[in-house]
Length: 184
Image (cartoon, rainbow, N blue to C red; front, side):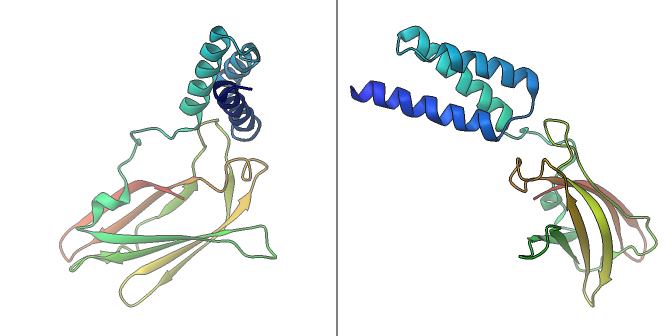
């Protein structure tokens, strides 16, 4: 087998793996599978179909370039955010931890009705739902603990999900509300 044919076989194998593991958007999946089936022969036409199939999978598995809500990282003049996903060995429910540290002169708004919600992914499925929520004030900031209940789609998406958060920080004279998508 020539080097080109070996490379073509590797590409076909990778496309097959991607189609098997990471896709749920039915229309794009059907097109990619059709292209994959047509790419079974090693002709120039087969290579074209393989390229189309891989492009469709790439489009489907790449997150959107622009988010609906700006990232919390642009809010560093008000606060900083550290985020962690804690996966316990003997428990299937991971815990998302958000640690907010206000900038000088700002503080967490305890009176604001905060809200955290797991957003649907690109395929329209919710990988997790929030089972429990704890807010733990600290001297300088606040920690939010979200116990997540995985759906059947959680493993398919490799523990990748987005939490939509609504919260507020205040100074002595003004309060600012934030609605942000936090990616894990």
